[in-house]
Length: 195
Image 1 (cartoon, rainbow, N blue to C red):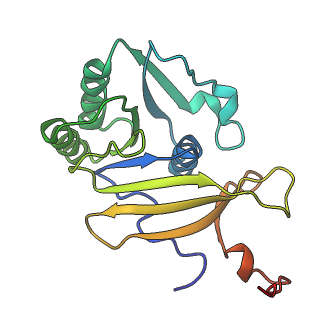
Image 2 (image 1 turned 90 degrees about the vertical axis):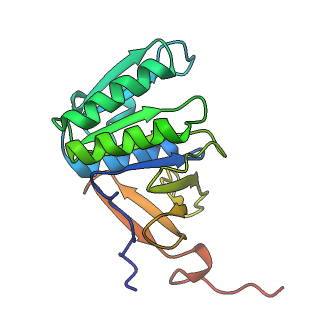
């Protein structure tokens, strides 16, 4: 397998996927940036954490983000389902605050299929739905070679149409490309330390 190859990414269209972990927002921003289009982000208004469009500048133009704030998760699911089914926007993000039951997850999948839209649920760790096509975990990695590191570890922890796996990736804001990089111990110029 070539080093630049990342199976199951970009995310399969007409399906809903999940992401968790401390770098979940970066994963989502990169996924949105690679779609090169306007996308919808559904967020519950009561949450203390707020998205700031300027935070997306390393990834995409903030004007490409349509943010919807809802009262609760029931409203968020309704908005996301309609946006997925409509198909006007090719990418829909929904922040999940409580576990989805199978019916809710299945409704999102059917809506995504109907609209040929890709959905991504940002979930708390351990709160995945059985209906998800893939579930990813994204975590930042300290990189001593870079002062301002964007190195992350992306893991597929659930995959209905493939196998799990893990890759170290880096987003290049100048070229707007995602690079799969070798693990620190396998990089050119590194040597094994005696144990």
